[in-house]
Image (cartoon, rainbow, N blue to C red; front, top):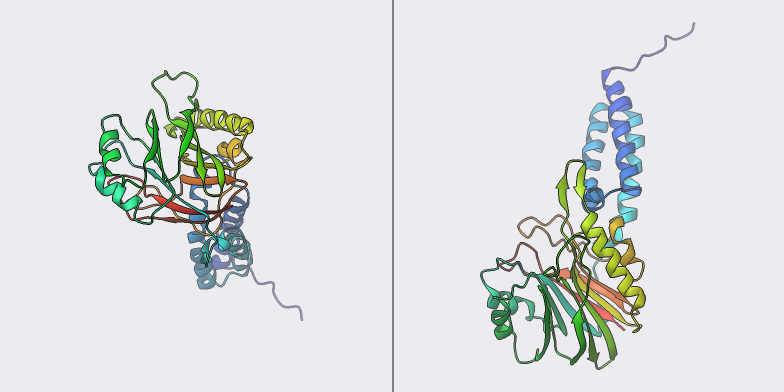
Length: 307
């Protein structure tokens, strides 16, 4: 006698038509992020996976559990390496990058935090003309070499030459917008071109995030990197994007960074993304980590590089 066909219950329908599609969408977004907001928040999509898994188990939904396996595999495949400890990463240069904020109430305390690990280079953004003397006075004598252009600056233990502004100004902005510089640092390991850049901020718009100015800055920076005559290059800056953001493609086509640590830098009170970066060419960025909070809305980062 044929057995009656069992119709899916409400729990199974919820798993099949709600949980399973959500799991598939999360997996697709992990693998194929688009725009600027999603790449910035992509690591946090992993928080959805345990929720889907728990609901699938509670509902006893086989389709939901099978579909949840997709993001369950995708997330560690993409980000698992970021959770591994750096170990004894080789280091020839140590550099610090920090957007100090133009409203920072404690320049001296900020500098003290940045130089505690005795880096070779310290790059600053949002340093106002009024604050430059305060920062300059706070740096130890070991950092005798420095250059300031517009609102970006570089302090170095090693001699600097060829220091000059770098024009990454987006179209439509005036000459007072000066947020890039290039210099050559003469390290014991050889000459390195050092770029300091603060790309335009991303603004909310009627159709989402407005990235046009930032992308224009990134394109101009990419052109400068293409023309850079020195083989060894370090870029330090607030790029207002994660390296997964396609808007940074003109930059990341020439430079790379580490894959060992999330090192989220913004906002400082509850960091959700690393938008402050150390990238390099013909040097390996072997580790990146955040430093303690300063008077800025960004966290500083410190990176080691191997020649």
